[in-house]
Amino acid sequence: MKTYLDCLPCFMRQALWAGRIATDDEKKIKELLDHVGCMLQDIPMDSTPPQTGDLIYRKIREITGVFDPYKKIKQANIKDALKLYPELKQIVNKSDNRLLTAIRIAIAGNIIDFGVNKTFNLEEDIRKILKQDFAIFHFQQFVEQLERAQSILYLGDNAGESVFDKILIGELGKPVTYVVRETPVINDVTFSDAVDSGLDQVAKIISSGSSAPGTILNLCNDEFIRQFEKADMIISKGQGNYEGLSAVDRPVFFLLKAKCEVIAKHLNVKEDDIVLKISDKISQRSIQ
Image (cartoon, rainbow, N blue to C red):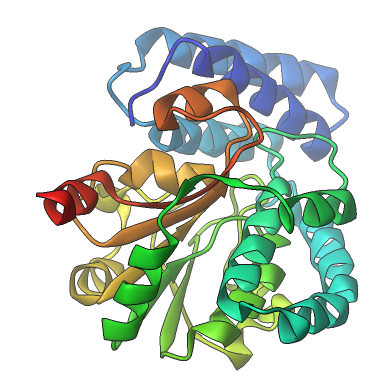
């Protein structure tokens, strides 16, 4: 997915938010915004938003001197999500369709996104999504692919959301490799975050090798690329991973909530819609 004009003010807003979280030094924050503003003049619009995000968050770390600005926020998000975990497991256990309910819960966790939202109501969003219709609903393809799959690659998104990913992974019934970011970026899940969420109890955890807030294949390490190429099924969580992989020719299932106008338009859905979508090239081949 390319970068759109509406992405540019979002990049500036993210830089301001992260800068203020990292430091109260107004001069450093102004320096950061000056640098990011200059960077945006030169970014190619055909690059993906996570590629630009990678450059911006590198600059945030460089100027503020803070390696993981969102660390405390991530820890709080994981703690809050873990409090809800027993209740959510009960909802799945009592559901007529455990897999679909677990998918809904995993998508509900996607609301914890400080790249887009500064505030959110997690419990309210869960209640809504458990009843909400899907704007794109490739569930049958998901089930069929899952039945055939011997290995599943699961691309994580944000740290708090990873607790909800654990619920879905528990319903897949196949060996799962869970992918995290190599370097802290926004509130995305890293290895230590995934362990804090309990993902090591249900999946093998690997790093993509990338510091981008999304999966950009040419920025990933060899181990991840090998896993990506051989996996029978790939589950991709969140907008950043969708932005990086929307045109990939692999059996990728995108699970996300459309939290901004740009993503909603690209998917041809409305803001706040929920999506379970197979990658376009695979979908087109299955129709032919």
